[in-house]
Image (cartoon, rainbow, N blue to C red; front, side, top):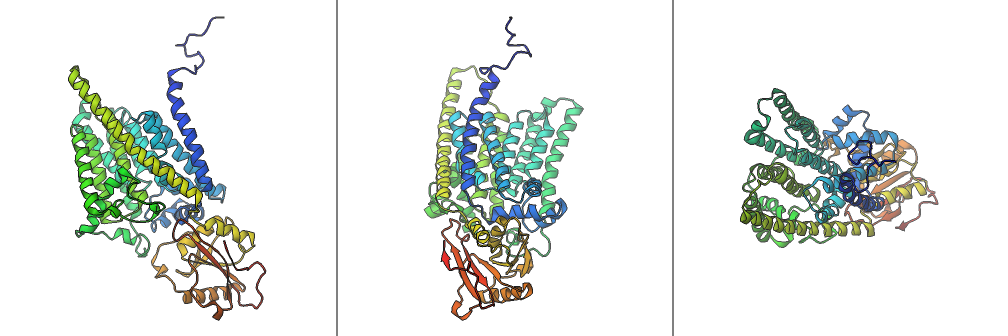
Length: 545
């Protein structure tokens, strides 16, 4: 029997074929990453920001209703649209984590397969703080932003032969997060600049290619414009919602400017200068604890070094500077943000490294001295990149370890207690509302609870003017009594802090149980039972968990 010709289309795939060899490392790394991330997700206690997205997708009647509800959120729609079909199949928010696992793992595979990194760097990237923890364990839309940035970078190589798919990637990227939209706009600017400088000669006089490129540019730009239209806030948006982030800071504030600039060295050298578990706290300026006199000069030196190293790579450098300027401007003018938002400064660096090869490959040279110098500079850059990624890998693994050891939020444990003690069928009132909503996210068959602050029933939080100011303990008791009167029976009170009332003077409200020790400072829970009858259910036993 004659062996098939290896070059024949009928020949069986060989395990030693180049295509298979190119997939072994990405597949192996992705498998290890996915297993570790699945373990982390299964032990991560989801918090109110994660559950808010799930409740919006679950309880919005259709995409139009979802868009109307998102007007109060300040977030693009794509993540929620992906969640809506899942929420129609199951009421368990674990489905959201499963989707997040797929998105994050796909990103790692694509980076390992296509990024201009060696195997060590791809591995360090996968287990870095942002891919592993902030955009991995915590299920938010930012993982989708990172995935689409990677997809856009992959498409850069064939940007003029197949421009529409790149335009589509940028369109979708604009609808993942505001920070993702800034990166999409920076990439679009770079593509226009690249077309002006080099693209015309590559396209030549082809009218078909020119139409495709114009269509791709319009597609990418329309994504950004549609995002702006979607995020225009309604007139009744509340001061505690997105109003604070849509009132621009147009005057010069030296302290705010310094805090924004100090983010640059922080994202490169993370987690130096920060003490865990404070990574989730909303503290502008990663090196603020080391002093602005330290961080600002380091930021200036880093920017100068980046500009010098890429001074001959006009397009990728322009994309990077545009992205950094846009991200810092948004941070200064609109929203100071937290660590998950600041991580996009590091994602901009990923775009620069990828674009350095895809947008401006090194010209060949026959001169030995030039070739030797180029290799030496490449080796130095590779070592520095590995060092920076090692910092992030240390931060990512440590953050995961802390999350495994300590509960991030106690909402799920609170919901489990309510089910175990058969209290989940009773009417409930929650305060603070945005924290109590996380408990509802785990009560899969309960459609809503009554929120004390806006004094209305609901599931997801609507950040409108009816929320008003936080209620006092006395006001909470009054609204609980009114709810009990309407329902004709006892009411469970869910608080993220203990009542400060002298309970001996209010026999109708009794403490049930407290869950404390969450990493997130406002994700502890205290349960009370309001019952005007003289008898107390045997389940209502005072305790502390």
